[in-house]
Length: 100
Image (tube, rainbow, N blue to C red):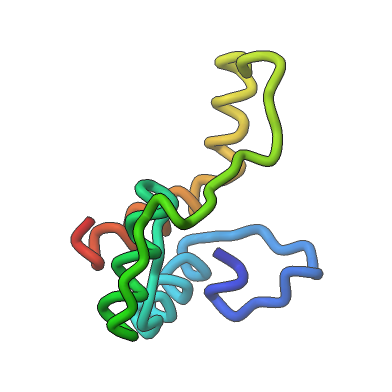
């Protein structure tokens, strides 16, 4: 959210509604947004639509780099959601404006 709002991410800044609105406005200006759901299919569609290059989605590696030894607790999940509130809202907004 900070990055899309044009705010220096190296400076500790608390995201608020004003920063979120700045990020939303900048997000509207981005020509291409590729979502991680159906990643391979989305990449293949991008190359076809933009460059008329046919790539099978099975040709695009999508390899998990890590494995997780345990499920996170509900308490940790709630904390993650709380600390990433505006990032989650921004992702939902991006999906809405791209009609995903």
